[in-house]
Length: 374
Image (tube, rainbow, N blue to C red; front, side, top):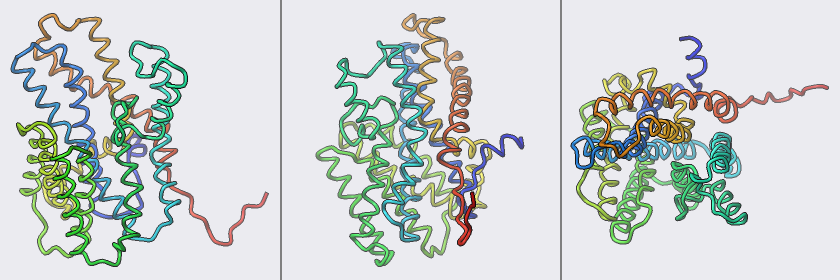
């Protein structure tokens, strides 16, 4: 236990009581993402029209909320960091690049190597220059904001993250947000979120970007003087609303905008309930140690688990080819925790070998007047 604690506990330089449930929420979010890919890859083994197929389709829809929860947490942390102290844009972006790129580059290299080893599974264009352009597009995190198929299936969300990193510092500076009142900022964020959701409902677009605004509102609520902290009841309602939002029977741009708007409100309530009072039951639940450790390695897990899952289902296809009437329900349900456990192992190796030492290691503090002689 001490060995695990030494490697999976992170010193985040803050004693804030919301750190532990935030780590747990990250773990929960990445488990939801796992459910999406598990349900999607298991679909060839489901009997068409069966109740189990309907359950797995619902699992896939519910799990899509995991990325939105990540966006809320990222919106909260980045906006809070920028609002709490003045930072040079170059230094801020350097820290963001240091956070994202070491792990991403390793996983991208793995995908590239597998593209050559298994050309039938490759997304690379056939020509040399087309492949080079595609590789550069992926390295620059363009798939997502731009209509480009990502090499790493989940990397589209990193494009959203990078867009947010570029926009928010500029917005804080140009709009003078630090000098504005809390009410002005809250009203402004709500207007931008509603206008964006309405536009995307009518014309399409990247409506899920409003989830970052939900995180920014969360920071304003946490920083302000709120007389009553929301209890676990409101938080559970937010959790349930967020998870069930993607089951709403509305399709198209209007449906996505409606579902994202529900998530915008629901996950704001969930996070506020968890962060405001560390003693409520919901906050304690998300502070469960294994869930927090998963949250601490969630970035490595997020990038790598889909590849591991795909390999597992390829192996399953050799033993039990799909399309032969489906697997028994108990086998598929047994596979869920088994494959989740399997995906943890390589993700933990990636976290310990790359993400933690290269992206999360504490920066050495410079002592004025101290020089190293040599």
